[in-house]
Image (cartoon, rainbow, N blue to C red; front, side, top):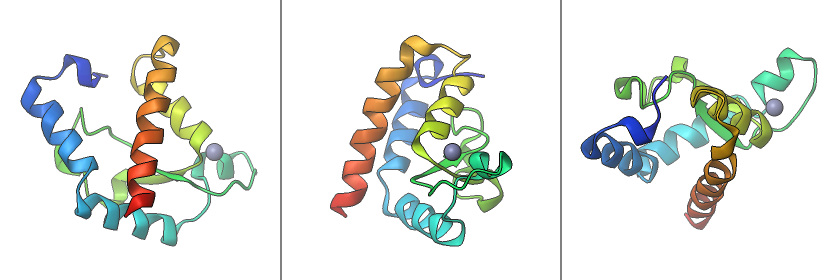
Length: 112
Ligand SMILES: [Zn+2]
């Protein structure tokens, strides 16, 4: 799997732009409403409220799946971070940077 660092600047820009778009906020809110529980925790019979919506196939791999509901899953923060780290080849050194980025996005969403 590839990460943003390996993408060209245009691809990185498109992904960032999408995550800041009204379209993504609407898709994300709709997904959370449809499935308010973390799907990974649910697989382990644990009930955890979902806080994040994840692209099962990351946008860095297939940008065309960005609004495909079949490519979205509701996750709690911890499962989202674990999954994002796995998507990035299990590089835990990137964890704090990923979490900072997510917190920033979450704040922007709450400001809406
Ligand atoms: Zn979870």
